[in-house]
Length: 304
Image (tube, rainbow, N blue to C red; front, top):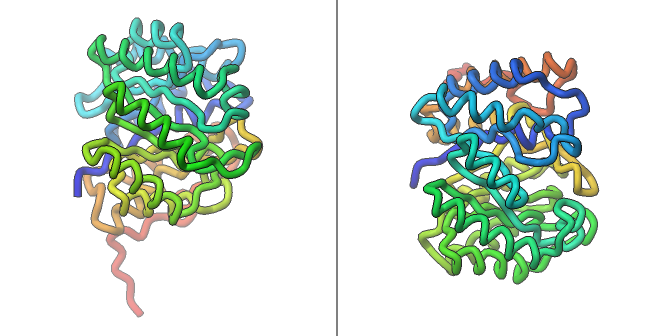
């Protein structure tokens, strides 16, 4: 099995819908804690208009700070929605650009103000520009497993978007379960179809736990050859432009599950738990993650 890569998205997807703005100093402390955990990719923020998402107003400054102060094993990623966001990301040190197209027309309009087709044309042009600048690029299909507004999404629509990415030379592909509608059988089927299109594609997944199937879907993705897993500390987050926002798969829960299967042994689970505890203390409420509440049983030798 190829190495499993954990992509921590708590600083972006975890915080984007929070009404209490987190000071930059607090974010820096959390990011440094994530460095200590050994996760490979950390999404520091998104390049959106600060008036629309005040939580992301310090994204440029955070990238500029950490571009000169980060471990060599960590890749800093950022989400971009348009050409202006890409320009900002290139200027402040983004190493991996994440960009995507929604397979749901309704979600696409609410999230970007564009149709899926319009967004796809722009995203592919942006992806090529980022690659030409020497940056890593991950292209995603949002609402790939269903939409809170439209219901089921045709697999053909998802595969058409993926095919356009592959034709443009983009081979790091993520499927995002924006509305949390995915089920394990659907996950295996869709990723299997993509592997038939191009067996060399680097596959990533981004699941929300809206209906309690997040970890089950991660396991189905693992069985299907997915090696990049996006998750958020404490299970925080949710897309503000979907009908029923709900948290991401918890990073600690995901890593705990993988470690119980003998994977991701290089990641320090306690360091992740420490960060999640700090985040929960800041927001003064319990976070959804299970291992944060129960503690780890990795390595536990119990007696009958």
